[in-house]
Length: 76
Image 1 (tube, one colour):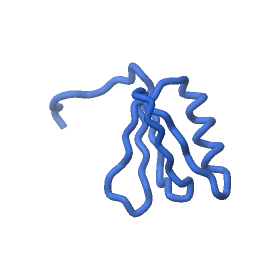
Image 2 (cartoon, rainbow, N blue to C red):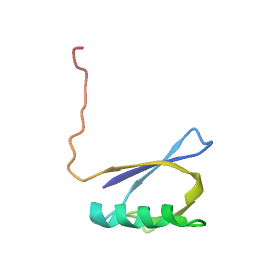
Image 3 (cartoon, helix red, strand yellow):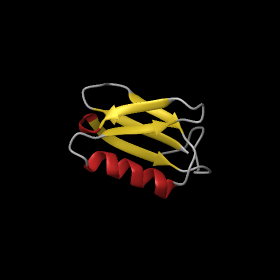
Image 4 (tube, helix red, strand yellow):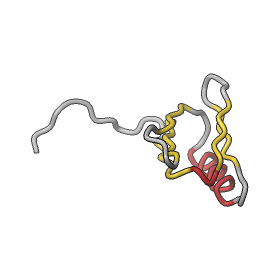
């Protein structure tokens, strides 16, 4: 699945490909964000560990595997 994380005062977002179930990932994110001095730690498919201070997380988008991605142009 793909996860995108927005960080406060940073114009770019962090994009990761990780493995696991959506429910497990959401639970670990919620636990890290609920702690006062928590750090959100995620491990991507290559085994790299990324840590983001929980108080700096602006938003988290979780896109499960197989989600429909639109490609091309459409009439408005």
